Amino acid sequence: MNADSYHRSVPRTIRGTAQADSGGCAAVIRLVAQEKRVSHRMLTHPARCRAGTARARQLAMYLSHVVLGRTLKEVGEAFGRDRTTVSHACALIEDMRDDPAFDAELERLEQLLLTETGHER
Image (cartoon, rainbow, N blue to C red; front, top):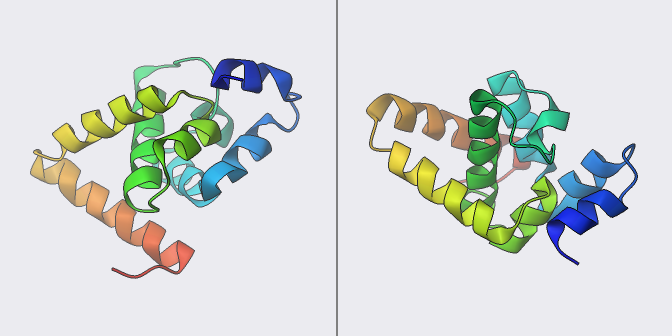
């Protein structure tokens, strides 16, 4: 079962919960939704959405993979996406780290996530 058919098979009322728990990405989704002022629902929505929402989703996927160490498949399941989409998102965010301002913001989010989840660097 691919991510699209999985997404359609889960009732709309529990889609976000079922996916957010996949791979333990719920903390990342909550953090990014709050920090980027994007609804939790939009981060796991099957549509691409507007550029700002898509970028927030890519950021959340990156944090889930890099900071929490979740596999690309786990992250994909949490966001209703394919693992290749997660890989693409991670590559985009990694390339954006060349910008010092973006990198500082990302480090701040990483630290917030580590604190919230009880991890330390």
